[in-house]
Image (cartoon, rainbow, N blue to C red; front, side, top):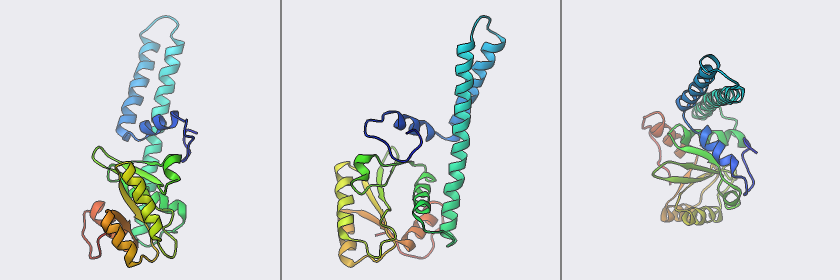
Length: 214
C-alpha cells in the first residue's frame, strides 16, 4: 500500500510515506548523508557490538537516497508531460493527463497527492496543497464530449465542505449554463486553451495570447 495511488481509509502509514517523499531532493540527500555519517562513525570510532545501529544507519541512508532518485525521476516525468502537452505531442490518455495535471502544480511548489477514498468518491482526483491554499482537482472527465453541470456542482460541494478551491479539467464542450455556474461558485475550469495559457504564465513566466480560465 505504500506507493499505490489509492489506499484504505484505515491506512495511516501511506500518508507519512507520502509526506516524506514530498520533501525536496536536497532534504533527502541531507538525511542520507546524516545516516551514512552515523554508519561510518559507529563503524570506525565506536567499539563494541553496534551492528544494530550500523544496520539502521545504512538502511536509513539507502532509503533516503532512493527517495532522492525517485524525486528526480518524478520531476523529469512531470516536466516531460508538460513539455509534450505544450508542443502538442501528448497522447491524451488518462495516465498522461494525470501526470500533466500533477506536474503543473508540483512544479509550482505544491504538495501533490492522490485523493483518499472519501474524496475520490466525490469527484476529487488530485489534491494540491500549500500553506495558503488547497486545490481539489478533478480531471477524469477531461475527454467527455460535454461537461455536465452536475459534475461541476458535485466538485464545488466537496471543495466547499473542506474549505478548498475547486479546479476542473475538461476539454469537451462547455455550455453557457455550466460556465456561468462555475464563475458564480468560483470553480476554475481549464479547457485545452486555458490550460496552455496557465502553463505559460505559471511555469514559463510568459503571457501568450489567449483566454483566461473560467
